Amino acid sequence: MAMGIMYNRLGELDFHNWRMRTNDATTKYFYTSNDGRLVEHDRGHYDFSIEALPKWEHRFIGVTATGLPIWVKKRTQYKYSGGQINHTVMPKDPAEVFTSDKHCKTEELTSYITWRRGKKKLAFIYLGIFWRLEAGETLKDAAKRFILAHPEVEEVFNARMERKGFSLLGESCIERRYLIELFEDGALIFKDDEAIIERENFFNYGLWAIMVAEGFFAKEGIKRVQCVNEIDC
Image (cartoon, rainbow, N blue to C red; front, side, top):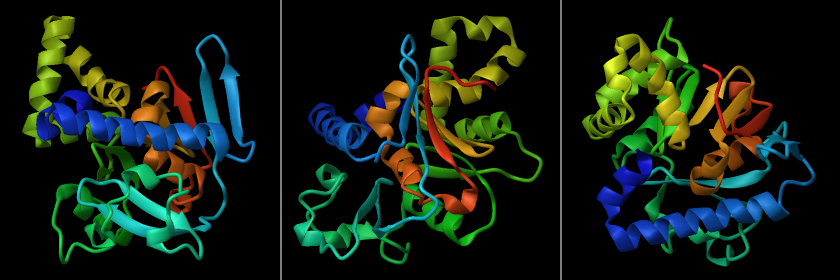
């Protein structure tokens, strides 16, 4: 879904450039910057996990209007950030990176600000949007609420249910698919003490997963990023 939605939003050329830039950043981290904390679990399925650092040790710059996290090493100036992991997605002008919503209001940015200021637990991050658990909700409940609250996503979700034949199996089957479809499409899901992302999508959408591994989400009690092919829901 997200691939199709981002393609529609950006157009073919900008979508290709966006995907290449995010892929470059996450691939660089995978191969060079996890300090031996990456563990491969099943070579048949290529699952892996990255243990999270107990404390965030970088300089967090902020979030772009489209929900991309921007950070640099401590004591590094923004204009000299060529060697940073996320350099490929960093705007040329640091004024395009925000830590408040006073000068920029997008759902991606305001959802991050609301999470940072609030006390509700994160359910997942999808399309750059921080989605939190309401009282008494399960992750499946939160996924359904997200999809129904975003017509653009709901339209693609319904089309996929129709194409896969799930719509013929009844509402109970569709209820189970809400979370699975988000996971398979790149959502970073927060469950117990882990953040879980579909393995291949780590390389497409994994900047927030890297932030988990680097200790940014310590207040959520997250101890590792799990990159797997299937999610148990």
